[in-house]
Amino acid sequence: RPRRRAGSAAAAVLAPSHRVGAGTSAGRGSVAGARVRRAAAAVAEVVLPAVVSPALAQRTAPVPVVVLSGFLGTGKTTLLKHWLENAEDRIGCIVNDVASVNIDAKLVKNQKLNTQRQFDTIELQNGCACCNLGEELMDSIFNLLDLESEGGKPFSCIVVELSGVAEPRRVRDLFMQLKMEVAMELADGSGMPPVPFELFKVVTILDSSTFCTDYMEFSRIMDRPELAEEGAAKDAQYLMVVELLVEQVEAAGIVILNKTDLADKETVQATRAVVRALNKDAGILETSFGQIALKNILAQQDARVADREAEEEAQRHAESSGNGHTEHDHSEHGHSEHGHVHESDDASCDDASHSHGDAHDHSDGHAHSDSHDHSCGDPECTDESHGHGDAHAHSDGHADSDSHGDDQECTDESHGHGHSHAESKGHSNSHGSSTTAEDRFGIRSFTYRASRPFHGQRFAAALQQWPESKKDCLMEMLLESSSEPETVAAAQLSPLSRVIRSKGFCWVDTYPSSRMYWSHAGKQMNLEHEGVWWDALTERQEKMLDPLSREEYERSRREEWDNDWGDRRQELVFIGQGLDEAAIREVLGRCLLTEEEMGPYRTKQEKDKAELTKAYLLQQLEES
Image (cartoon, rainbow, N blue to C red; front, side, top):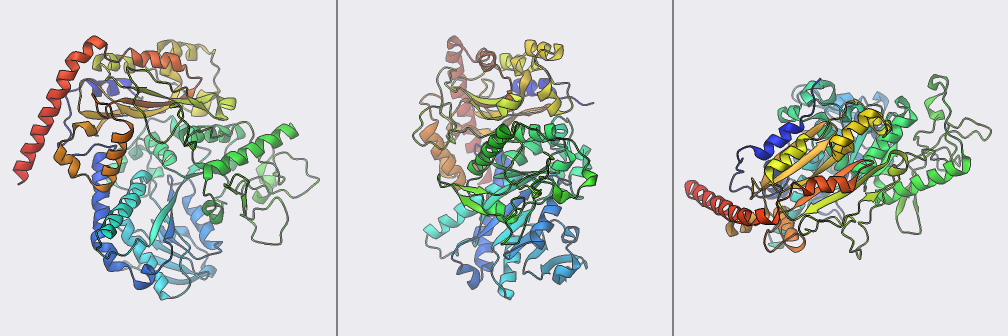
């Protein structure tokens, strides 16, 4: 069985310098970022002016776009089919394969074939439409919007189904970049029409029954062909399964835990707790068979607050009832008898077990969505496994977002505020943040920051001491006793043994100008060069930054800049169970350069920046 090798990450620290192209701007995924910027610029300059019809240009508000992400087999198509067949407003869907949606023939109004005589677009009696995803996402959206001009009311929403191995962060960045490109054109008085659509939410759907095993699997997408559609992008085949899994969760505004009927209570709770730890701001919904109403998704303006309120209600009910679920045979009941999410379209229905999709306005001004629905309306029913209208009975495993990032006046740097602050001399006042996941599984997180580089050899040695879990299921790792010999032995080797996810930027003395990205999840550990630090750019390079990079650069200058080191820093987030924060800080602190080592390093950094500037100027001469 392949295993994660911390040694490979350590080797990246000590390997000969991998010089990123001198013209490359700093930033996570700089090559992918360049592709996004080029695509957005092309849409803004060529596609948008040509395809925006007068009707689209007169829209009073852009069409909200929901991007649906998740592996093949998680239930994306089932969810889309449910949305299309039960839509109250007119919606449009862009999918990988129209035929796979399998719309009920009685609901189909019109079907269009492409040149290969395959279904390209399906129009439903209720006005909804479903079309294939073309080579370019933005072109596909405009083609779908063209259907509005053929009559009927405008689309209230567009849903884009990504392939099973698509990286939602790239798609999100494409929307952001396009918006900024068009804003610049409008500011220049070019007369360009506004973009008739905007990204509303990234929704990721997970298989609750397989999440914990996928998380601990050390394999690539090419080793798991069942996770991706046939003909998926070749570069995605080399991604690690867990690497893509955590990106889908971390990029989401809403995470749907599907197939809860195939997972036991403990597994669902563990999955939910880990998802909450990975993404404190996302709303989390549970269901089976994709039975989540689209209106519930659209109603979640502040998903984190709505999710927290649902969990608090669940905990209050669990404390008052004092009874857990009882085991029973699912085959003896119809699926609608279980406490999963189901919708009722009957406006007069007052059965608390049915979902009516209403968003209730709470006193705090946040929308709470009736998405955790319960379906047993029998008042004499004593089976605790059935929902009874007031019971979100997943009490002890649901993580509550205890983020302090919304307090604009908060000055405690241990709280997340959406940006980072450079600390001095390797110290950080981050005290970590915990959620209700800690009550059940002891999952918590903290951020390590320092304003000195790591010593390459000491850093590599620390990584090589990081033991790998022998568990093949994340839930088993979370449930194992801290007194088990294996757990004790691992903790003695390194306090990092209980970390389940860590990521961030590293500053290593062997690469004074290169920003290194640390990404670890499950048994996978990567340490990669991700462009150069902003401070290493020449003045000319700074002036050539695209709008999105310019905004990030200026934010960094305001919030992260150090007079001596610019934006160079250590900024690492650790998420795990029973973390010994002090011990982890001590391990990393020993890797930092000492006061005596900083003098020679300063000379090395200045020399490296001069060489980088020279390489850039030579490159410009060659291109001219």
